[in-house]
Structures are given as structure tokens and as C-alpha cells.
Image (cartoon, rainbow, N blue to C red; front, top):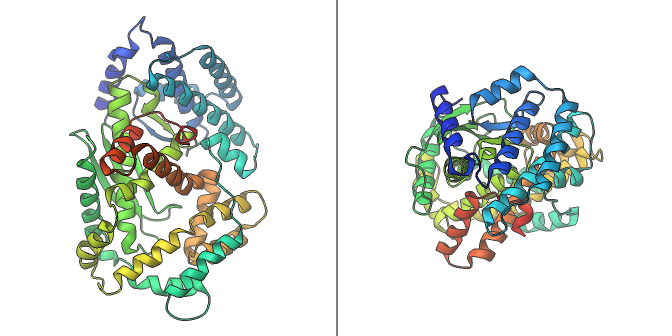
Amino acid sequence: MPPLIFLLVAGLVLACSPDSRPGGAAEPMNRIAESYVRLVLAIGQHDPDYVDAYYGPPEWRQAAESDSLPLDSIGTRVRALQTDLTATLPDSADTLAVLRHEYLGKQLRAMDARLGFLAGKKLPFDEESRLLYDAVAPTLGEEHFKEVLARLARELPGTGPVPARFEAYRARFVIPRERLDTVFRAAIAECRARSARHLQLPAEETFTVEYVTDKPWSGYNWYQGGYKSLIQVNTDLPIFIDRAVDLACHEGYPGHHAYNALLEKNLVRDRGWVEFSVYPLFSPQSLIAEGSANYGIAMAFSGDERVAYERERLFPLAGLELSGAEKYYRVMALQKELAYAGNEAARRYLNGELDAAGAADWLTRYALMEPARARQRIRFFDTYRSYVINYNLGEDLVREYVEREGGSDAEGRWEVFTALLSSPRLPSGLR
């Protein structure tokens, strides 16, 4: 949690910001935004996974805790706020104001859908993801994954089933536990340096790293406000050399830490948009957050730069043999083409077409997850459900948007990417 003194200062900043002065043009939207934040915090009293971050006025959280509104009362207020928002039109000449209005509308729609789930209403996977994340992932059949596996089989040594061969091959590239912190800190320092060339990060931004166990995820960024994050890395399962940069970029720079810091600086502090002081996890914001964090890896390391950096810097730190590094990254590029296999497992599992054992088997066969990792992923499905689409579909949508709007020039792409990290743009707005 952020220090109380910071939260009080943040509250004063919000109260005194130009957009929130009494009589200002944005006053109706700011009232709606405050109500939205309070409702997010109210849902958090029923759903411990719902509020991913909050750094607004502490008295709003205290009120949510003391009021402890029942779910049906929260639902009534959410629907009334949707009506108020519809009746409040933004300034059409202000692009960000229009995006803000659309953002709050879709966030409220997602809130209503999550309330339905908490009340016991289960939706089909695709309908749930549409309402919660403003997007639906494509459906891919087994033939797609079998074709990728056939190409992968030609790259792997040995004979027999591809999953076992892949697991045996990849075991050569595990970061020893005693070297993990050294490797990860080097990776995150490099990701930060590369991102800082293009992003105007707040001077005070910082993070803390912790290593944890018994989690359904491999890494997590807990944003705490004041441009500070807690980055946790799960060490339950082996961490491979390529995951160091993946996690460093995704959880740190230009991923979640940078994204949240830029939202706090540009929207909360500079514009007084209090709705961005809270992050409801099951909402369209998550697709932008996860998609930009995943695509941010390619933004930080273009072309062959990543392979060269990891081979020259991280492999030695991890004590791994340099021979075979180039082939390893060819194999991992093919494995990434299987990313949507996870979506298919989640879709079939949550729709009741597969039980937990069947979904884990699917992940082993088509996502090439060893059994322990597949079981961990089923725990993720149980906890976060259709959230899985935010990683791969989110990355694809962000990539298409940035490369379409930014063109082939690297600086142009960074300009578009940076604007995305500092805006209320929705998943449907990326198409």
C-alpha cells in the first residue's frame, strides 16, 4: 500500500486539478468518475481479485469498507450511473474527452457483467470476454496447432511426441535459482534503459522486486501509486532464460509499471481524471494493459537485438552455454505461434466441454506446457476465467494498431505506443 501521506497529497491534487474545479466544463463527468471509483471499491468488498490497484483518496476506500453495500444495491447504482453517463455528452472537439466517455461506458458495462458473475450468472466464454474486455478471441481448431507442431518437430532433437521433446530440449535453458535475481535485475535495467529513450517517465518512478511461491501466475505487477510498483516473480516452476526479458518488459518497462505511471502522471495528476486512480481487473482496461505489456517486449528489443543482448549478457550471467542460443530462439518463436492454444483450453474448459484433466492435457499437447505448468494454468483459468485473451489477443490488437498508425518508422511507432499508454483508448478503438 502507498504511504498515507502520499494518498492525502494525491487527493489534494485531484481536488485542485483544473478539470475538477466547481463550475468547470468537466464537472458532470468528474462526478460520474467519482461515483464509478466508489462503485469499483464497493465491488472489491465482495471480490478480492477485482481491485488490482487504487491510489485515490483513502476516505473513499474507508467508506466502501464501512458501507459494505450488498451486490444488488451496487448493481442498481451501476445501472443508474450508466444512464447518467449516456445523458452526459463529451466535448466532441476534445479527442481525449470523447475517449474518456467511451471508456467509462465500457468499464461500467464490464462492471455490470462482473456483478452478474458474482451473483452466480455464468456466460459462455466469448460473451463473457466481450462484455468484460471489449473483445472476442478467434477460435482456432486442432489442425492449426498440429501444423505448427509439425514445423516445430523438425527443429527439435530426438523422436517421439513433440511435448516431451520440447520439454527435454528447453531444460538446458533454465536459469539456476541462485542466479535468478542477478539475471532478472540485469534484464529489467536493460528494459528500463531502452524504454527511457522514448518514454518520458516520472523522475520519482521506482519498483521493488519480490520472489514468491504458490501463485497461479508467473509474474505480477502490483501498482501502488506515487509511481511505485511491487513486481513479484513466482518461482514455483523453472524460469527459462527468455522469460527474464519477457517478465522484465511485461511487468516493468515499457509494460505495467510504465503504463500505470504514465496514466497516473498524464491523466490522474495532470487532468484530474480520478477514474484512473483505480484499476478494476475484470475490465477492458486489462486488454490494453496486458496487450501493451506483451507488445512492449518487441518495442524495447527490435529485430535481432534481443537475441544478441540475451546471448551476450544474460546467458553468461545465468551460467548457460552460448552454443545453440540462435536455435533456441527459433524454437521459441515457433512455440509462440501456439499461444492461442491456451485460449482454446480456457474456452472449452469454462464452457464445460473439457474437465480440468482434459484441459491440462490440451495445454500439454498443443501449448507445450509440462504437466505441472499446465496444472498451474488451470488454476489461472479457475481464478481469472476469460482474462487469458488479454495476453495474446491484446498483443495482436496493440501490434496491429501501433504498426498501422505508426508506420514502419521506429520513432513513429514509439510515438503511437506512448500515446496509447497515456490514453483511455479501448480495445474496440484499436481496430
